[in-house]
Structures are given as structure tokens and as C-alpha cells.
Image (cartoon, rainbow, N blue to C red; front, side, top):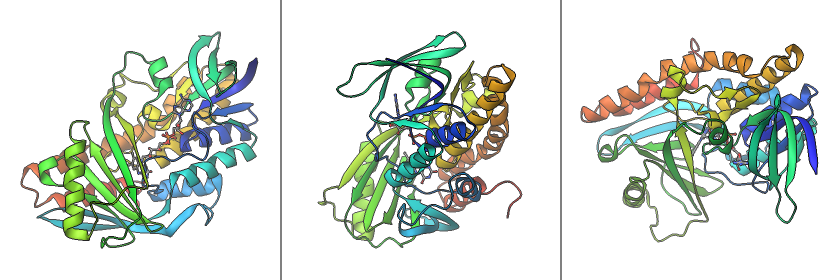
Length: 372
Ligand SMILES: Cc1cc2nc3c(=O)[nH]c(=O)nc-3n(C[C@H](O)[C@H](O)[C@H](O)COP(=O)(O)OP(=O)(O)OC[C@H]3O[C@@H](n4cnc5c(N)ncnc54)[C@H](O)[C@@H]3O)c2cc1C
């Protein structure tokens, strides 16, 4: 069977659902496919970070409903811990969710706007077809189908199949992230996302927070560092915060976050080609320093939909208006990127200035320039 659509969106995370909802709202016949069954879990802290991202979600999707939020529904901010050195707090209220609930709510909104959602659907191949694309998809227990789409939006996350298909020569760096959830109590100050920067593992880090009586811990870094960092973190939480190292996780999962800043800044990677656009993590649009990606995912998904609407009217390609719309974000990211260097320099200088350097670099990511 062949399905013909205006827009095929691949991946029903925040980027894909924002793009699909906006395309459908603009009257485009839109199919949103997701390889996982929904709702699906995703390794993430689930915070909608920064006033800009919060306003965008509210504007496009409405208030996040109570059943999508956790207990507590809002974190007060961040605490940056540098063991044996000190800590620094940064107030920044942010709605707190499990991603399975947040993403399911966003996908439902896309469906309400008129997008067709196909979960448990995997992309097998994709290739250009005239001005559009031919994509072969597969659902469990069914024959393979073909989708012919005028426009393609690759919203398939950090390890994007769409990016790999469009840009086979691109070799991104990756941060590996591993998350574990435990149903146990610890003595970490409630209401905060706790970031731990042990100097011996610099520049890698670990985080911990509690929601719905569940402790969520993450370790992040190069693949070779994760095992050692995880052991250190569990021992540190046990020694300082009453973590039970014998406890069994109720959920665990990993993911890859692409590191593409250099290529995005020097223009050697432009996350669009013809009428195929990459959004969110697939485009490498995580905020420098904080790694916040939900806001940029929604923003780039909306921008992709806007570019497609323009291209439909003008008959030109969608890549050009989409890449233009990314310029302000990339300009902001360029201003934030030196924060990485300041953090590394503070660690190399012995760590005394590291808690403050972390809070300063993070603060810059949370608010639009000019906002106090
Ligand atoms: C541990 C951790 C904590 C984080 N905490 C935060 C936080 O608190 N706040 C924040 O803003 N950001 C956070 N981030 C970043 C955030 O998770 C991502 O930036 C965000 O999920 C990006 O959204 P996305 O829609 O681009 O991709 P994703 O959310 O990854 O969605 C991609 C979707 O595509 C699907 N998919 C993949 N391949 C295919 C395929 N071939 N066919 C069909 N579907 C496919 C996947 O199943 C997935 O559902 C965190 C990241 C990590 C790893």
C-alpha cells in the first residue's frame, strides 16, 4: 500500500509532535510516525527549562495538565555540587514531568490538530523522489508500506536515522547517558535538580533528582567513562545522602546525545537538505552547557512547519527558510558555548571557582538575553 502525504514527521518526541501539530494546524496532510509503542519512556530529567521554552509550550499546547506533571509539579532550580569544594544554588522554577507523560500529551495534541499518528512504526529506508521522498515503513506483524511525502521532518532524536540517511559522511561526537530510577528515599534537598561535578572526572558529570517518590540518577560522558563515574556516583550518594547501593532500579535506560556545535557553527553541517529538515536532537540543537533540549526541540519543530508552509506557497525548497529561522538560535548558542571553556578552566584551576562558573554558565542558558 502507498500512503501519500504532504509531510511525514519521523519521531514523536517534543520536536516531532510540535512539528506535526503545527503542520496539521496549517492545513497540511501530516503523518507522524514513532518507532516505539506509546506512551514510551525516555532517559531525561523531564524539566521544561527556561522561561522561553515554558512560554512556547504554553502558547502552542496550553498549560501542562496536572496529570502530566509530577509530585512536585515544579522544581525550584538547580544545585551544582563540586565534592570536597562546595556548592552553588541557582533558582529556576521549571515544570517537572516524566517524559512518557509529557510526550504522550504533546502527541495527543498533534492528533487533535489533525495529524495522523502511527506508533510502533519503523523507517526501513528513505530516498528522494522528485521534489519529495519515498519512505518504506514497517509495523510489527504487517507488510512493509511505502509513504510518499512532499516534505520530510527528521525528529528522530540524538541517534537519528534520518540524519544518517541525509548526511552519511557526517560523524557527530556523542555524549553517552545512562539513567536509573529507584524507589527509595535519600537525603538530597528536595525540589532541586542536583548536578555533581567530581573534579577527577571533569568535564563529565552526574545528576540526581526526586519525583513521585522516585530517585532518578544520570551519568553522562564518553562511553569509556560511564562505568567508573556510575560507581563513584553511587558510592558518593551512599556515603553522603543515604542511598542504598543494594537497591534494584525500577527502570533504567540509555541514550546518545549528539555533539554537533562545531559543525553547526562553522556551517559544515546544515541540518536540512531540499525538502528534508532535521529538528530537535536530530539536528544537534541541544542548548550548550545545560543540555536542555525540550525547548529547542519544540522551537525547531515549529520552525520546520513554518518553513514548509512557506515553501508550499512559494514553490521553493523548505531548507532555505528553515535554515534562516535557525540563525538566531545558533547565534545564541555561539554566545553560550564559551561557558564550556570557563567550566573546564575552573576545574583545571583546582575547582574553587567551579560551583560559581557552573551556575553562571547555566544561568545564561535559562533566560532570553536581556531578561534579568
Ligand atoms: C539524561 C537526560 C536528561 C535530560 N534532561 C532534560 C531536561 O530536563 N530538560 C530538557 O529540556 N532536556 C533534557 N534533556 C534533553 C532532551 O531529552 C532532548 O533534547 C529532547 O528529548 C529532544 O527531543 P526530540 O524530540 O528532538 O527527540 P526525542 O525526545 O529523543 O524523540 C525522538 C523520537 O524519535 C523516535 N525515533 C527514533 N528513531 C526513529 C525511527 N527511525 N522511526 C520512527 N521514530 C523514531 C524515538 O523513539 C523518540 O520517541 C535530557 C537528556 C538526557 C539524556
